[in-house]
Amino acid sequence: MRILITNDDGIHAPGLRALANVACRFGEVVVVAPDRERSACSHAMTMREPLRVNAVTYPGAKGYEVNGLPVDCVNVGLTIAFPGGCDLVLSGINNGPNLGFDITYSGTAAGAMEGTINGIRSIAVSMALLDYGQPIDYTLAEAWLGEHLGELVSHPLPPLSFWNVNVPNQEPVGYRYTTMGKRIYKDRVEMREDPWGRPYYWQGGTAVLTDHAPGTDVAAIMDGYVSVTPISLDWTDHASLQKLKS
Picture: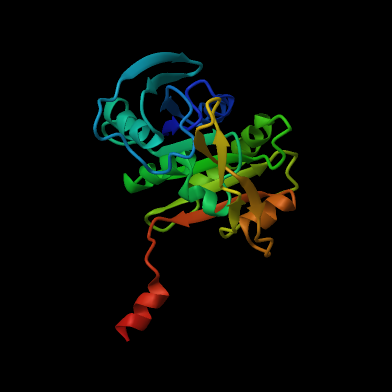
């Protein structure tokens, strides 16, 4: 199996190394990742400046760093490493959760989206650390994915769909197939002042887990399960469309 790996935390991220450790057990692996952290870049791509690519040493795989975004990395990887296409795109392992609406901001999810757009089975993997004072144990996701990657690769998915996987930062009690929950942020923009008294604004905020309904990715993580969510790139509201047609 030919596997392309990317992330949004950068080429030196420990989660990327953990993901490569798993992938190398399943086939030929090429790692193409940003040269620095690119979190929350969503599905952006570089259009008005050149992309620079440098080969890097990576254990068990070919490695390249790109001065761009995860979407750029997938497309560059397909160009220089797998011009005939590959069998799987893996994105992650992200150093935090991508639950609910997070995927609309996530560079990790965007890597899987771009693989899907290119007609390749794709999986985004994240560590759902909810207490940011704790260290992340990537071996938990590494172990779970090593056991279940074959299932995720072979399980039928509709066209234009990919898997979004979140692993709790504790030994999982199991895993659940889930829907997207809701994870929003309060106090999103904070005004501050620089040393000269000039205002500036810092965007971030505190995440609020608002949807504990059974069956959601948020509920699964809160209960200690791995959440596995099929995400569709077809954003059409089909129910509304049918009403409009009638």
